[in-house]
Length: 329
Image (tube, rainbow, N blue to C red):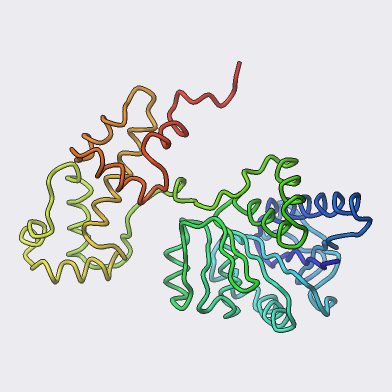
């Protein structure tokens, strides 16, 4: 039987993460017991203190144990934390140290969404692949450059360290953990019971590109503004460099340093984000989206769209167009 510690951090934490993980794991363990007469998991809430009140006072969780009362555990689950990240990290130094010590004793660690920041603070993620909420991936990479942040992945696995993408992507990681410890059949049974889309492992479909504007390079901000206003026109790197009184090599170097993208990649991402908005309208076609954002070659458009979204324009439209009924009447 695996002892699972669902961590209750200090501050503002995700009640959905901790409650959902507990319910799904306990259900799987009960099913496992019915089949084998053995318990797969012993799942407990473990906190920095008892009770553990959410910082906003919305709810209070009373952990079964505090971290001081757990000598050894097999799996630690770190939920998402909310609010100011620097405060969450500062307020949970004791918890972070406990996670690191348990890992040295053989515990495996799973972090949901932006709970990855607490895990990163332990140093355990150094040199490893990691996922998190796509909106926080650039910040995680900036704060912890020694980590290989894979923003597109819903689940990342590396030497007994598990991380998930944003929000409800934690359910996919929980199903993975059930398969890891209880087998594929139990994982599929659980996924069906909770109606979880199993084996989904790409969150590119849900990403929204807003551009990286917090770098302070006025030249690059000007180029970004021009790209975002004129993306449907024929823009070349040489023309952009000339119009902003610099040369191509300098522009490419500074643009990449400031935004993390080449000029061409940035243009492509702006175009794709605009195309997504067109495709989300029920009366607009894929061809409409292609021409409206500056493409004339359907193959090139499909390739670029799939590169950043993970699916074809047709499949994206099928999923998000406004004529898709959420409720059948």
